[in-house]
Length: 374
Ligand SMILES: NC(=O)c1ccc[n+]([C@@H]2O[C@H](COP(=O)([O-])OP(=O)(O)OC[C@H]3O[C@@H](n4cnc5c(N)ncnc54)[C@H](OP(=O)(O)O)[C@@H]3O)[C@@H](O)[C@H]2O)c1
Image 1 (cartoon, rainbow, N blue to C red):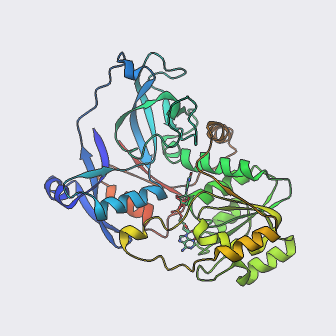
Image 2 (image 1 turned 180 degrees about the horizontal axis):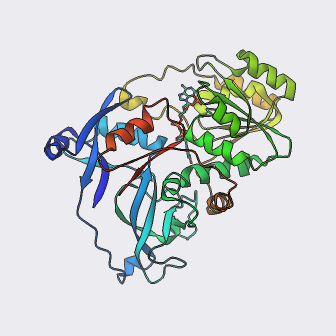
Image 3 (image 1 turned 60 degrees about the horizontal axis):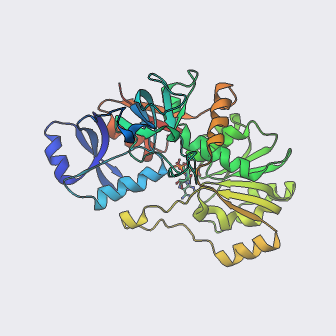
């Protein structure tokens, strides 16, 4: 079976004779990547361990921000003669299943259900079903999977669960009221693109910040009322005249969706409305340890941010993935034509290096990148 993998130097030399491994750079680090064949897995549906399990043949997968640090970790610290199989999202087809699996049958297409902190079955760990989503055959507990409707093509399904489940959960936690003003930071990040598309179903005003106006027209068409370019080197959003002016006009942002708290939390606090809610799902600096390079962003100070939060009665909300119902609502919205999903491009066969380069290196990327097994 096939796997898309990051390879150690020794493994690369072994495999590159077959011409399947190439080297690209991510964050200045050489990354050896390619298709690696491993032996098929044997699935015995009658084995007691497989009673609740589903054998899935992966049809397509995608990588996320979390994969980047795992890739760079393998590239800088991994064992020379080994390889690391990537992929945190996938779409696959049910091939076989144990006798206690409800509501699924061979031929159904499924995606991962990363319900967190709890899975829907007692004793089963919450969170993503796998960090090795490109492994072509895998067995999962049925509760880590979600059936998708025929209306959802493989390319969309392969980029859907993390963005959908996370942003539907973040929006749920914000308890948005009609007419409220919502600021989404890092507009072009996959998470924020998902959030902006999801917010179209809410009667709120959506504002967004970005480091470049490259996709201004597209973001406006997605419903962003005002897109504001920020200078990442500025210490606070009130130093940005446009943001300062918008905040003064609307009385501050009622809600903020921020994928990178280490970049933005302290900066955004001064432009929030009294009693405003802020939700975050992640941070930017996940790999400076591996690449030995400081990110160079001005660090915001906790003291002033917390003082402003106390005086403003602000609510800070953390969010990791979401619940099964968040994913289900997103799938229903997609099937009803109420949720657009931003897809950038699809790669296949020997285009592994091109897939990673587009996913992580290309400033022209707008939306998610898929690798599809033919
Ligand atoms: N915990 C969870 O459940 C969960 C789920 C999903 C994602 N996450 C987290 O969410 C975060 C975003 O992931 P993602 O895949 O959406 O990221 P992504 O697509 O890789 O984000 C890239 C975007 O970030 C912005 N950016 C990059 N460098 C910046 C800088 N120096 N200053 C300001 N903005 C910068 C840029 O957008 P602009 O030019 O538009 O600013 C860029 O296009 C990550 O921390 C990830 O781990 C967590």
